[in-house]
Structures are given as structure tokens and as C-alpha cells.
Length: 74
Figure 1 (cartoon, rainbow, N blue to C red):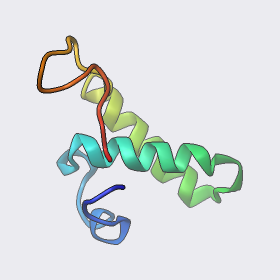
Figure 2 (cartoon, rainbow, N blue to C red; figure 1 turned 45 degrees about the horizontal axis):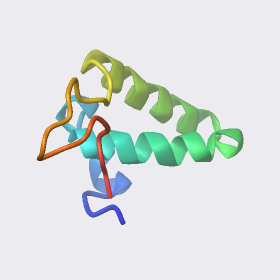
Figure 3 (tube, one colour; figure 1 turned 90 degrees about the horizontal axis):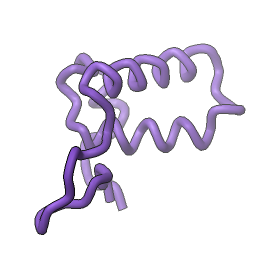
């Protein structure tokens, strides 16, 4: 279960200030709803994807005992 800031709060700050887990959660959520998004939703999803790409993606380079190779938002 996602525990973090909701979209109302996040919409008031730039994507560059979002945590990686927030980007991952809302990217996954919007990706699941993609066929039903209006133009504003598609625009927000593109911005999230752009920020993820600017940060080099969501995967860790290596796994260790504290984390795996995938960003977990649950």
C-alpha cells in the first residue's frame, strides 16, 4: 500500500522535487489507466515519465541487502 503524498499535494510542487517512490507509484497508476486518461492526465503522465528519464530510470544499478534492483513504492 502506498504511503505518501497524494496527487493534490504533489500537483503543487515541481516533479523534480518528487521522491522516486512517488514517481514510481503514480507512473504505475497512470500507466494502468492510460486508455481512460483525458489530455490533462496524459500530460501529467508524460511529465512523470520525463522526470523518471531525467533521473536515469527507476532501477537500481545493483542489489544489496538493503534493497533490490527495482524501486518499491509499497
